[in-house]
Length: 195
Image (cartoon, rainbow, N blue to C red; front, side, top):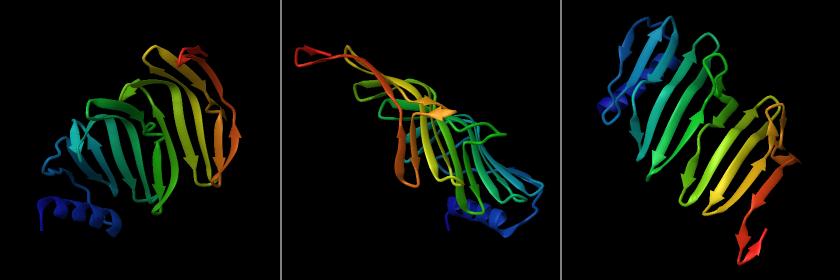
């Protein structure tokens, strides 16, 4: 059995087996560096302290941590990271230690809250988010999108605003779009037609 598989199985056994292991150790995974695994008092944390690569995507961590609380049976992800591939990159925030961006409780996804925090380019389209966020909570089965972004292609620009965290511009409840409140400002040309 490969070293990586042994380490993943060790983590799964400790987390799922209810161990009260009280040691701290660093895990070494072939091809991945900067991953620290800490088991203290029945809680487990994996923190990413340096850049790493997963399936060709370069990940730069800025305090990104995955934590498991045995008492609450909760797995959470918080911090920020930058993902880059083929010269394109995007920064994403996953909340804080006290308000994580991803929460799994008793094996079920219960909350997602993330924000896109920096300008990024997709091919020749430049996108600059401003407080752009996405939230989902299982209790209400509601997915919300809020904030604004500016998209630029050559000399053409478009700015879209979709509310804020308290009054999101796009709301999807139980799979149905229940609210769209968006303002768009644009200045572009389409085959010599100025809009």
